[in-house]
Image 1 (spheres, rainbow over the protein chains, first blue to last red):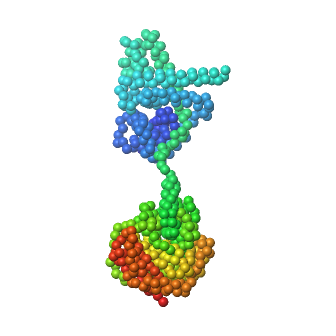
Image 2: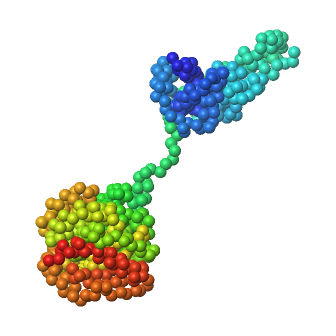
Length: 172
Length: 413
């Protein structure tokens, strides 16, 4: 197994999830993830693989570098394998769709750095990796994350509340 | 210890603190109810945030196109635009020249990638073929013509070229009208006033000239510079003309005058020569008898008039991308008469006597010099005009005569 294959198998799922949450589109997320691994191929050495991959993926999204992305057959095949192994989420109900929409709204309301730190943390990156990927000081990651979580939850709850009120008004 | 701030609590819960720090926070929180509440709240946020983010995994595929499409104008749009431009330009040219001219250039459509023209106006190729065939008496519409015409078309600047402010044409008005805008799109120089730099003449000796037969309105065998031919032979001229194709090809390597277009109107054949890039002269050959000016455009005309050599004609036409004689409409052909060689000959002799001067009659007006003379062989009235000095035009005339001589000689009874 080549090194990029190992990287791919180790981090692709987390990276795709991170990117999906970040972008709201699974296809786009997979594309960015693949391009990230392609970039990794060109690196002679990567000190912290996970931090590097998330940082590159984040930058790819930010720079909209997907325009020059080319599909790599090999990686696409690997992604196909991976997808087969994944448990597909259960059928989307209206309830779930509404939740997803609110979550999207709430995450979009965050500042970019807060959002990225939170999403990275959710994929298991430790504080040093997040600091490295986002070029923050390690000491500020806790503050960034606590702020991000609080705001996300508060936004989400506010959306939930207004939705409940709408439904109540509609019912009465 | 001071109360740990929210960031510190999250760091502790995330396991990001060093062992020492973690132990201290743990000790403090155990003894501080306020901080215990904060820790509970933090745990709640961490769990809730995680749950909210999980909802995002339900992202659909293809919400955003997989490949960012770069806005590009569909090639078809360019094609249509180009077509419109060409048609408009051609129409303008036709209108400007009063619709009398009958430039023909079939290859032009193809060589210039203007399939769109044909696609948009399906009749275009047919009618332009008719043009070509009528202009060349159903024989070969060829590349040099098209090639020569192409620059004119692409420049969209007809004034420089002149397809002959000349008068007559073998085309009937009907035929010319039928050609339609698409044919005129070649815009083969319908501008009435030629304007161009002085003529430069090549010094090629006459004997190395390609053989050109443009003797009669109904016969013409014209060599282009690139060696392709435009042949419009009468039955009489057909055989020698066909035989001279090879010679033409060989000789055309020399600096022959480049024929940009040949147009026919009633009683005349107009040939546009390019003597230098962008510099053209017009040779009008007026045929004496109206009998000769009858349009020969159609397939039926081809059959009757060009019967003896139809084989060679069609073969050649089929070989090229253009097959004007074949596609010419039958209705046009039906409307057209077939010239009688004998009558035509008689008519030529008649008119030819009127002008016998070898050097010809020179007229200059508006900077355009016109030389009139009688063709020694065909006895047809020849008019050569161009925007240049009489002396230069005389040179061009000599050159044209040299080029025409061998072919004309063959026709001489």
